[in-house]
Image (tube, rainbow, N blue to C red; front, side, top):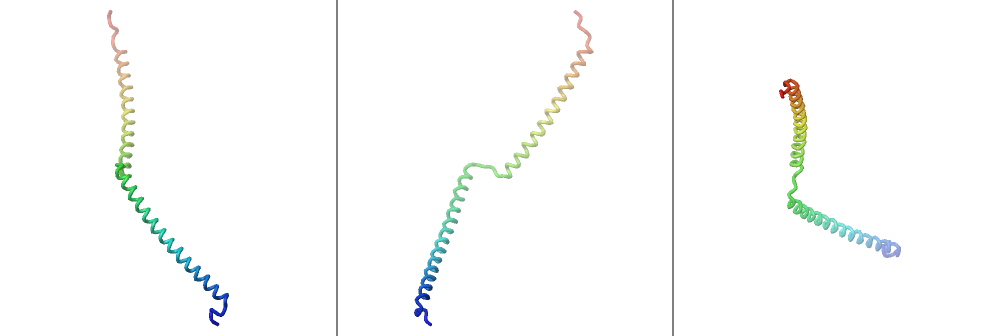
Length: 107
């Protein structure tokens, strides 16, 4: 039995051919969209890279190094603040002792 003898069989082959052609067109369009997407992403990356390089931003490593230095400086400042308070208290005690031990002025 030849395919042309059965009209339903011919219709089915036509639909399959049509669907195959549609699938090829869709796959081709999807491939074009994917290519266009990659090209747009590449251009956007270039633009952002150019924009960011002109902003003189620091790297993460540089930022972390400065952050660690600032934390250490803050700790040192706190140590010095406590030492200063201690020295001021000792000086005040020494002045009180000196004033107490001095004889009253004759007058």
